[in-house]
Image (cartoon, rainbow, N blue to C red; front, side):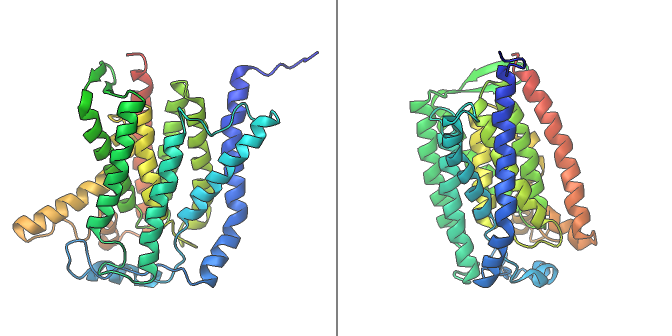
Length: 354
C-alpha cells in the first residue's frame, strides 16, 4: 500500500525541477574542464576594431582591449549540457524516474532544432572571430542575416501549415486572426529575438542573467498553458545557463559567444511563438529590446544627422563609458529586466483567462 501517493502535480514537478537540476549539475561538472580546453587550444575572443557602421570602434576597443583572448564559445556548454539532459530523459522516462521524455514532436522538436541549428551558425561566427576572418572578425552581417532568415522561413512554414498557427493572443482581449501574416511575423520575431540577445552579450554576466530570467518566466507560462514538456525544456536551459553564469560573472572565465547568445535568443523567440505570447515577449526580454533600440537609434542618428545619441551602442556600453563599473551596469540591468519580466509574467497569466 502506497501511504504517500505521488500526485500528478508532484510528477510534473519532478520532471521540471529534476530536468533543471540535472542540467545544472552536468554543466557545473563539465565547465572547469571545458574552460581548460578552450584555454589549451587558444579559443579566445578577438576584440572588434570595426563598428557596425564600418568605422573604427575606438571607444569600444579602449574599454574592452583587456578582455582579448578570454575563452569564448561557452554557448557550446549550455546547449551541449541541455542536449545531454534531453537525451538522458529518454532513459529516465523508461525507468520511471521522469514522467515523460523531453523529446516531444508537438512541444519540443522545433525549440531543440532551433537551439542546435542557430547554435551551429553562431559557432561558425565565433570561429571566424577567433581566427580574425572577415572585415568585422566574424561572418558578415548580410550573410548571417540571410541564413537566419532562411531558418526563420522554414520555421514559420512549419508553424503555419503543419501546426495551424494563424492568430495571436492579446492579453485581456482574446485571440486575433492574422492568417498568412503569421509567416512574416514569425520571421520578424526570430530575427529580433536572436539579434537582441546577441546585442546584450557585451558585459560579463549580462546576457546570462537576462536569459535565466526570460527562460524562467517562459517555463511558468508554458506550464500554466499545460505545455509540460516545453516547461521542462525551459528548466533545462535555465539550469545549464545558470551553471554557465557561475563562471561568467565578473571577471568572466569565459564568454558564451554567438553560439550561445544567437541560439538562445532564437530559441526564446520560438518559445514566445509556441506559447502565443509574442505581445508579452517585449516585457520578458525588456533589456534586450532596449539594447536593440539603442543600436537602431544610434545608427539612424549617425546616418541622418551625423551625430551619435549614445557614447557607444548598445546602451550598456554607454553607461560603462560614463564611468559605471561593469558589475554595476550588469546588476542594474538584471534588476530592471527582472521587474519587467515579472510584469510580463503577470500579464501572461492574466491573459490565459481571455
